[in-house]
Length: 201
Image (cartoon, rainbow, N blue to C red; front, side, top):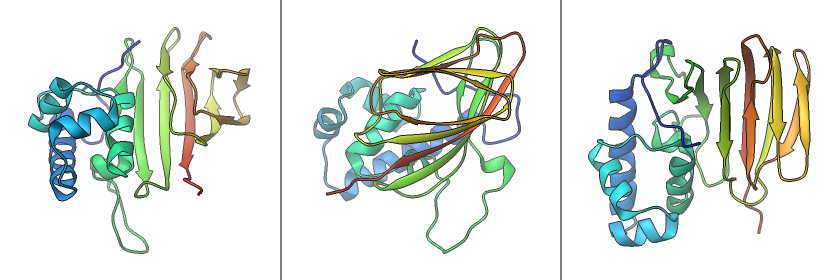
């Protein structure tokens, strides 16, 4: 399933502002690194057409595509959607928090905060309604996710494990291979997730 950046009814950055931040960030960093559209598309493993439309602000790239482009630029997704900064501490206002996925039944994934890449940590809040599923092709080698379920039951499947995580429970998963999160229950699922990508030499 390919999930797109969509508008959401939750408070936070809307589709237009997220698309504008993504467009501006990718274009700025690509030019600063003197990369052509062709070269960045090759490094990221995405089509040139998608990259062109993303830089124009007319595409709604999936989280997976944003991850690929960010990694190719040595950035984090948080860098691209403009929720990082350089001081030792900074505030991200509620209206600046972007929603980067919306499920078919109204669920959402919001990137609450993140550090700059390529070594980065991100904090997400997911809300999934019964029957919703998000699939990822995998992140860079060594990526770890820490998850805590606040409400409902999270079904997590990785290449090597299937976990059922109930409310009040937590889990750790290596997610550098294909994996997915699903709500196979009958009530709304809410969970927080930290993603860590640490590039060790």
